[in-house]
Image (cartoon, rainbow, N blue to C red):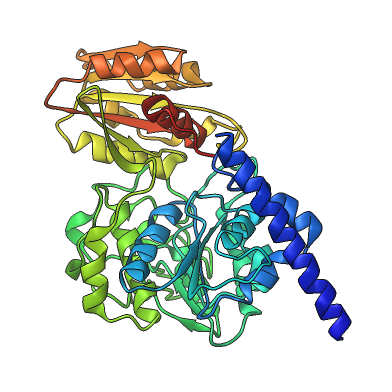
Length: 444
């Protein structure tokens, strides 16, 4: 047994040492952030590396999953823990597949693989949650939302929620699960579990949308399949609902949403705030400390990030699926700013199927007029979608199509008045390209 343990430690140390050397080389040569490659190489040396590192986290791992909001919620929770002096490991670059998780944990180890942190916050791609739960054994699981996203890779939300339920059910009874009560699929998931379940959500009817948007997913009862009765929706299918057939209803959130200020623009960021605050409370942190820490939060790259470029204010709003894009459009249309750049890519990280843009309510953006610039790998698909959003009353729209992204950014800045903000709505890889063009720095 002692010999086996020695070999395991030797393999762990070798894997970590090689990975740290790779990290140093990549960053020294300015080839990227080295957020994935070190983990990929290390796992070839030690396949059980994720489990070995996870077991060393002193007070437990907080796993954050969902279609939208993972990065912002992770950083909010990280801010709270940092302010209280805890040592935290975190995949802050957003690399949320297995190699990225391993790389993030190795960042906090010494050369022989000893990990000395109090907590680890790991945002996890929704499609691998079931795969990583056993090796990670999280203390808390935050389930933010489930929307259609990259259907060519993931499939429908029901299949994902079933995999989540089965995987979470096998975890220890003291695991804390925190689902979004406003999402019928996740509320139902929480109601089926034997683990401790605490919900978060909104209770602010004055923020209901006027109507259920076109990009809506789960409006049917997850228990019996009957159409849900909605008192109102906040975004997509998130809202206040009951089932008239079987009695299934929204679970009661733990925190009163009215009492919590959101730190970024967009109602979706109120959800992120509530999720992080609920998780912090379950870690035993006093509410006063949580409230004190949240205003110190700084957004992640591309998530309502604000920059000053050539004397102009720029706000980047990641827009990678129908629900997320509808919400960023809501932010734009509720502002007085009339210049917007939309960048649509179809690379692997974005999802190669861009048919989702036809589920976006671009009509609201087009009908307000102003200047819309489109670019990206699928620039003409987006331009066509905007043209189909026009009607005879749209006389004030200035639509500019520019294949070259750098030229598109320059054009957008030139069309932005001094007293206004340029909003940029990019898909994921487009956001990376935009930031590199604006800041000269690559993020990988």
